[in-house]
Length: 64
Image 1 (tube, one colour):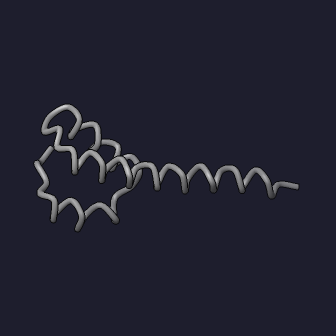
Image 2 (tube, rainbow, N blue to C red):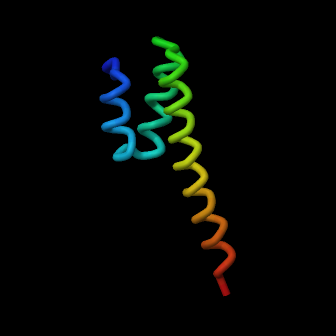
Image 3 (cartoon, rainbow, N blue to C red):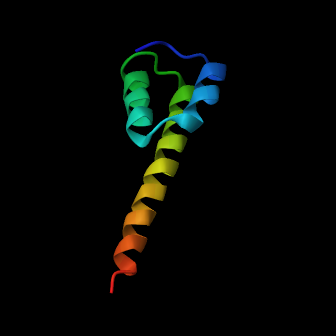
């Protein structure tokens, strides 16, 4: 996986899926280990996961 600068990361992160962000997070953990990148990736991953989980919960809540 290509090394992303801070600017490139922030330009691309909003268009990535939950799985893509998780892949970047795991790659960063295994290679570069840059704290600022890890924090940003984790923040975005949690936001995406939270949104998915909320949709799942609400979908179950509105079933007849």
